[in-house]
Length: 473
Ligand SMILES: *[C@@H]1O[C@H](CO)[C@@H](O)[C@H](O)[C@H]1NC(C)=O
Ligand SMILES: *[C@@H]1O[C@H](CO)[C@@H](O)[C@H](O)[C@H]1NC(C)=O
Image 1 (cartoon, rainbow, N blue to C red):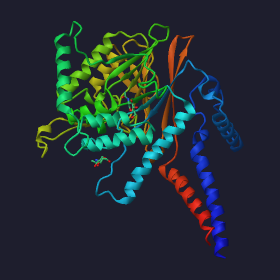
Image 2 (image 1 turned 90 degrees about the horizontal axis):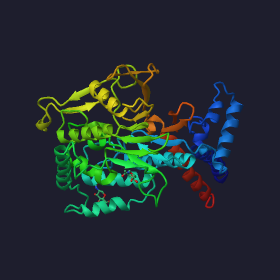
Image 3 (image 1 turned 45 degrees about the vertical axis):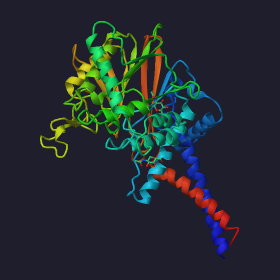
């Protein structure tokens, strides 16, 4: 009797496990257009009213393509392929964290890792970028910052954390934990800053080393693509919060916050990636010298008079009027009496967008050549697509649709967090040889709320357990 019931349950659990796991391991195939690089022949298939049987056919043909070793996904190998993940915001575990939340945080790392694995294997991108807010808080200690970086590297991106372990060994506190050596980093930073300022016209001996060329991997022995980590307000703080400590540990563990990489410069189709820490563009800032350094970066970038297309990667979106995206303009400053941190009174506390004047200045400096480009941002977890139209020699206006000959698209990449369905942004750059310009297309590939992933994992455990228990009843 019992045996019979257990057996029935085992079959039922097996069925659910199979369905759930097929779903999580083939989820991109349910949205084949959104989850594939854009290419002209694929777009031809874009039909509005597919019947259910068309959808089923499309699903199976996509699964076959992906798992059959048929690399139809990267068929135009001159195209540029970028994966962008919005605001993962991984949380921490504290002594008082309840066990359920601990489990949730632990599982969440693997949920995000599952999305990365699926998209990476399916699409084989050249660049993977995380749009800032890698962690959930800027108010954490160095040791916790290091521990989260380790989770980020090993659980989400499945890579070897030895390089950051090495950084830890070189920067230990009395308890044997990582401690950012900010006095040393700060001295070096100021030495370079002063030298660059003094020699503005000539080439300074010291430099921030903002520029790169043709980098396809930071670590060619390990991987054939580039990982770019962008600073978010939760990683280094807004300019009213950002301290030497914040900047030191970001640089130690994630690399530079401002740089450019130019590609194919001596061809007909040059393009570049610009990584910009736009949290440190305006103030009042706690350390105004950081803001100064960001403007030096933008000036140096502008002086290159680059004649190609630009992919700008940054965290806080550009200024736009209320109603275009979920977040409207909102800038806050610390109140005059901000106890206990009275030294922060009046400083920039938060911003949804850059200010209008800073947005115009930055757009002018980066997109001066009028060539089409694309801006990817994070911050607003809901995602958004707008167009910046150049209205005059110095003013850009955000609208929903293209309204001017010179324009740049801004994509706010919807968050990869479970509540937002675990999205991945796909950016395809295609060089149109008729118009001799780069064309950029974006699509958003959704997964599902984290519970679906949990269900697939837990039902597998229950199924194994139920079948094993049949040996004993
Ligand atoms: C970080 O991890 C180390 C090693 O597991 C541990 O000893 C330390 O307490 C952690 N730091 C924090 C702030 O939890
Ligand atoms: C960004 O982080 C990844 C993984 O955490 C790391 O492999 C990569 O080298 C980092 N990028 C830079 C520019 O340091």
